[in-house]
Image (cartoon, rainbow, N blue to C red; front, side, top):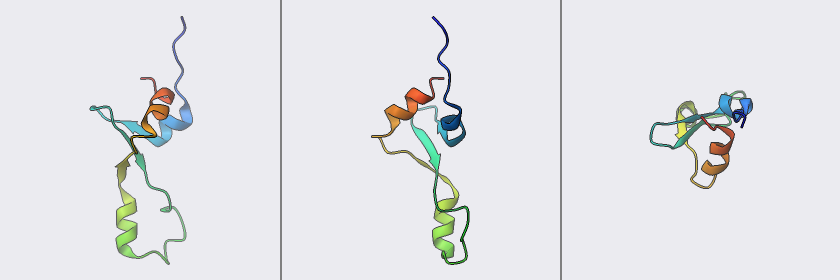
Length: 64
């Protein structure tokens, strides 16, 4: 049986943690930043855990 290939687009966007949760970056932080206040831009900076509903589909895309 062949190895399962990783979806490369998902590998660039998501990160699996040691405990099995999935982390992803925030949207709306790439351009048109002048109209967004400092607090909002700070919140968008880091990574956040994905909702539990979306985790199984992302884990299928990232088998390893």
